[in-house]
Image (cartoon, rainbow, N blue to C red; front, top):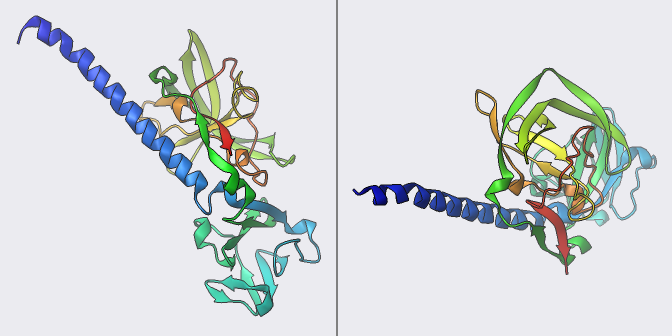
Length: 278
């Protein structure tokens, strides 16, 4: 092989790798749109009803009577309410725990709707998911920046000596604890930056962040979910896969706002930017 042939091999591989990365990102983006638009995706959430706000157990627009009883919720319904539990009509009373699985597999239904039992910080709620929601009918896609390999930045995960919890405001106006386990540190435009992150059960990371374009060129904040770091802490901070939080699609989610220190000084035009409507 001549030297000229050999010198051209590496750039060709780099171009091929970039093309594969773009195709992989496109598949990821298309899957995200399909997931959001699915019958029980975030667009179908029509209400989060805290039982403490309904002492009589009656929730406007939600059939049945719901009351909390210690570590369970008691649901009472008549046959005329049209409620099913585990696929069977309910005419009487049933005790329920919090739903943990996918929305379509939640125990309580009312026609196509799924009435999901939620427990958060000792409080009980019922979430109403309706495939016929106005938000789902109006959805036209997710605006996203074009894939740019320059926004896939090398970084490192620096764990805290001890995990911590800080109070941050949530999208519903209440403050709640946000668990954090460390920071991801990365460089952009010659300067070092960091984001406080949580560690998920599978070892992957989760950051809630804002940037200089938030609220103007993109939604007011976004989520970033880097894969689990390597043994030496190496991690890729890929802003191409920044995602909109659930509350960008429905007002009834209680997403946490970015914790102090997670507002980047530069704009990030990559990743998901805004919901599109018809």
